[in-house]
Image (tube, rainbow, N blue to C red; front, side):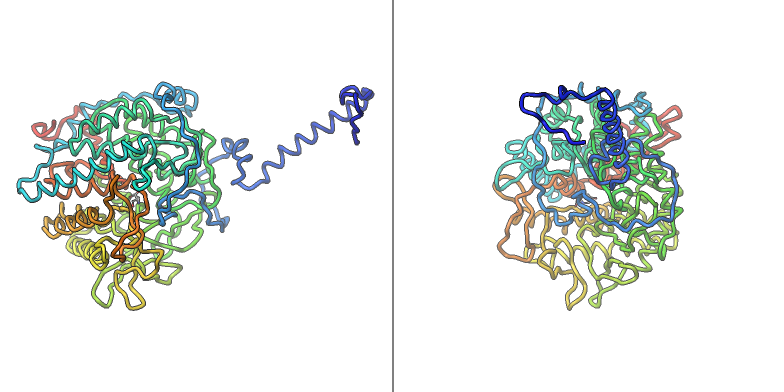
Length: 608
Ligand code: DMJ
């Protein structure tokens, strides 16, 4: 039927008979039904489909057989975007006045049955710690040189913070060369990543004015009502981790309220057929947002934070979500005992056989041993998974170079790529914190392995002109611990090598780790410090550096915190009581029997 619009005659007045109108309406309603039905046949990634259908996706926990060959993931997170390229602002900045009261509205409207009874007994929790979190004297070292070095690191933090405050306040990161802020698209419209990431570092360093400014900003301006698309992993490790540790260290209830609102907003990400979350979530509660595979280091790096969300809310849903991930990973067949980096959240099958202890895989392994330690060594399943994964890594990935350097190669369906990423350098620290709890006859072996890996990573620094390490270094083509490709030569203020120095120092007290840490401080000062903050550099082998104009938030939360701890006494955040999440936010060991009993069954004289 064709309608011709006649001049001066409205469409409604075209003189149609009743039967014609009826047929037309019938046709129209048929068309609408057809369009809606077609939504089901669109690919998952189409926005329209997510808007209408994402909440209705069912979630049986199955390990199917269907293959999902797509390995595309839209999130530009660290795990995929190892280039650390600055992602341009995609969202407009929001008004600072949207604040806590509005966040609380979100909680009630998006409540998915979560128990909001957050009557966590903070005083009891403090009594269940073995030692005061900040030590006797905030970990002040007795020898003057170490103290002086620690003061230097504190000065670096203040400098980085002051510049962020002057030029980028409320944005996610500082651009130190252009003296402005960067927002990017990793956090789905959330702002202030550098503030949330810095809270605990400022607090443990005793930078109290700065900490109070940060706290006030979180209270009045951290707007959780964003509805953009965020990396679940990045929001979890930086925002959830940062707020949790700020709460546990300070007892400020506001941090707990904020983190509970945020935690609840992450739950729709798990609405997939397997319960394995996708990498990108729409924070407006539309659920997951990306198509394609999920990444091991992303869905495997939620456990510590989610267990604490359950602790604080007295609601098991968060723990259930991460235990479901573990259940699937336990059940699925692993090639040579290894965990490939990509998994289909639809079928629950591996998508590719690429295994790496660096980017894409890294913090999954880290969270296994840390889950065990954080459970007060009761989570036997995590322990078993960690030591068997480590055994498979040793059998398949660990290599010795002709020059005697131990490194972790990457594995591509059985073929080794003799490359180690800067990200993989965290593994020295991981292996040493797990050394004590492995089989007794392996203890010395693990200590040696951790020391060897840390030594190799130090070599990657000392073989460069700047004494800073490249993003990835190789052990082939006649080189050892050196980047060959131009695209691997950058350093973006990453923490992993220093992180391993810190753990190695704590567990061995070999003074060389403090010396290596100091070398890094000097190199950072010489090559990364610019007039208005710290910046990454594009080529660690160039005598004259070119800056990338980005002060990453993990520089404040991790690199500077680990350096500060390296030059502090061991009683500042003692490892008996705290585990660090993968963004270096300290989370306390959960002592269930103490927390559920009278509390304070431990040495109360030492608790603050
Ligand atoms: C941090 O955001 C975390 O450590 C993450 O696990 C990996 N990389 C960056 C810093 O390099």
